[in-house]
Image: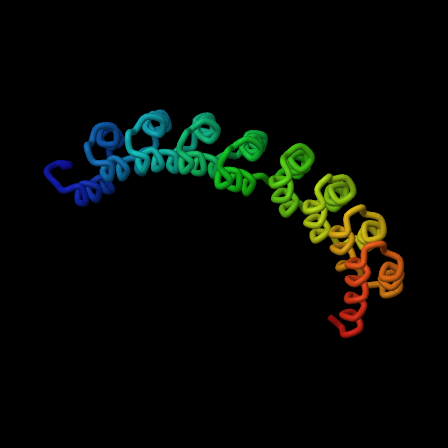
Length: 232
């Protein structure tokens, strides 16, 4: 492939130094070399052209360059939720700002890489709380690791049907009264053990070590007392 008589490599370098938007667009749309088209794409500011290339270019790397360069949220949303290429969806998700669209991607995308990228972009506490109430177990576990709201975490600990998710939530809280409540009352021995690990009152731990119906919880409480005595 040639660009003004140059090799692909030098053609891409030449595209990097073009300043005229119309020339850049012409190169991005018509050059035979994907490297040259990609170099031109990264210098284009016109979102309409970038959207066309992101949707239509025959080479994935050029489409990716267009997605990474554009700022048009409507097109990014379209690509994030509908493109067949995982790398394109990830790149689009990383530029999205609409929290509800990102939540939709977390709930529905078939790729864990895309879902993870979307979850990283969600900062709205209400949206995280909604996800943790209405998503699959694996997603709820990831969401809980992002949560900082004590009331929302307490709700997860008390109501989530998954012991694994409740255990993760317990690791996120510092409320000793809540941890005592869970250590004494949760139906799952795994969750009670996790709560025991957050307690520091030897009297409460001693009571649990004597009364819990599960030997592993009793042992965890006894071990916790020993560690506290040793100053750990």
